[in-house]
Length: 411
Image (cartoon, rainbow, N blue to C red; front, side, top):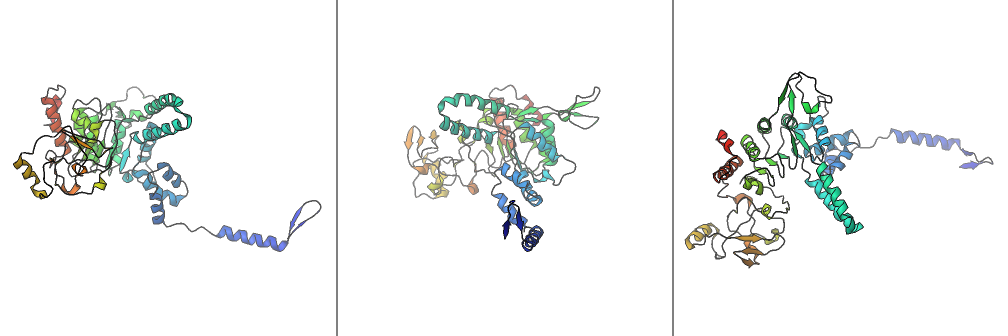
């Protein structure tokens, strides 16, 4: 087919050249068969936990963009203030391909996942390089965590209430709050201005109470709120969220240092009608336990489901209860036999051992998962998050706290 001459010039037969040209035109005219959008969406759904993967998929083609965008904006996890600002610009853009705000169901501004990744990287580096580099890397880790704290302005929360009307979960843990101002003449926010404001313009402060009130009025589907380890969270802030967001079913403000009501910062508040199965490890042992121990029906549960990190509520029953007693008669039996005494107990989540009244027990039947359809805790039954917070604040004030006089304004 090829004929090489003395000057090394390769020649091709004419009929073969025509065949190549025809074959090339055929290849260019054949368009690839795209996957149906339903199948492509199911494929991308398996990578929904990786925002970087979904973002890369959205850049492949227009079809991939349409399928990846709902997954990308459904539950965004934002790690710094710059990305938070660009996210808000996307939501408030006048001309956009999607109504991005209607897609959002949850927003996570905490650095929980970021810290977990850094800790994993720390362990890997220690294994590879030895322990000598641990101190230096720990210093860099602390600096990175400090700079990754997101600054949330009051105006940005207002924009969320105007765009993300269907949001169900909001995580503002470990964030900084910036009190923003609105320019009356232009309707813009001071924090969004690129240049120095002109003198003479009227600036109106945006109080945090008005912001929380707007969240409760605009985001009526909000059910879960996390404001853990946040310095701008006080007892009044927690009360405002509970007061203006009547549909809240879960409120987590643990480790917030500026809240004087300790029960609000050591326990996660969950309504009896709302349950979460995500268990988060913590350095504080009290974070492993609910607001109260909840007695429930004494039914036989599979002990295989009881494992470290899988129990969110515990059931503690006296040891003297016979095994053959009917579940409906347990509580009357306790009162009749005088077994309704207080028990001091300690649970180790890494061991099946439970210590009750300084006695160790290996029997795992002491730990029973409280079934969701039967929960009826005495202190939470029929009460909302607002009622729970109000009761805690009232109790705190009765014990001598002086900074809760504002509570009378909402009575």
